[in-house]
Image 1 (cartoon, rainbow, N blue to C red):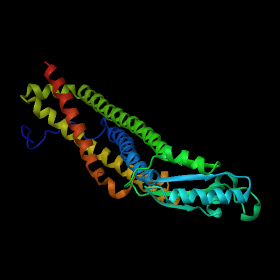
Image 2: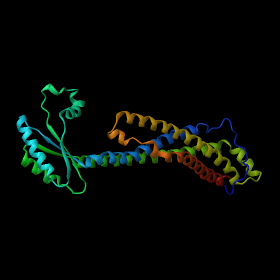
Image 3: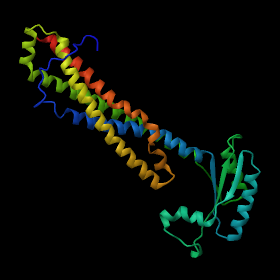
Image 4: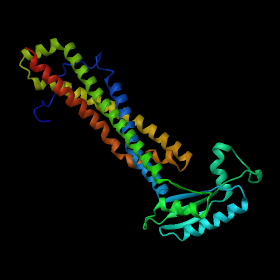
Length: 295
């Protein structure tokens, strides 16, 4: 780099350094920062892609104590829905599918259990003609007293608002982690300057410039940042692989959609370089400012 000597003066000993734990600390910081960035970036896009299917779907639930009355209401609702502009399809969910949806709360219920199961109609919108859900709900009530329209758009909107709030919190966590890393580097530089003060004063008496002395710290902290950053990113990548496998085992759903995917995180390779550069420039500013105050 311009202004630096080609060969650094090795006045800083390689062994018994006071900053020997610094790469480990930077590694932990980069691990936390990487996880916060990954979760923050994937959360909103994952929820948005998962909720896109829900925003283009509606559900009608028909509750009637009498089976014949339930069949009559279901047929009337189907005729209304299929004649409504903007609705691409309206199909009755089979009873076994409804029982599968209820299984997390009721357990495995056989079809011949005698349990009264409400009729569910799955509606798919064509996304070209808007549907007035409020007016549709009123027409459904007039057609079938036991019909209730469930619009998922409001629920998905609230979920996206929650995701944005979590993103802001994760961004705050990443910022605090980076600031903590800067503070740790500053303390490490000050400790190194205090430890090697006599050597620095001798070098000043011999005519060494501040840039020559600062370069030794720049080089050391650059290596510390690269080592710690690489270790933290590798650990975060291992956690990413584990989360992706767990999400694949869960299958489709909110957790699987919000989990970060490996092809979308290629930018992780620049984080160790960023950590090294952050540590080096923080050390440069700290050391040069301290050297300018030395007599």
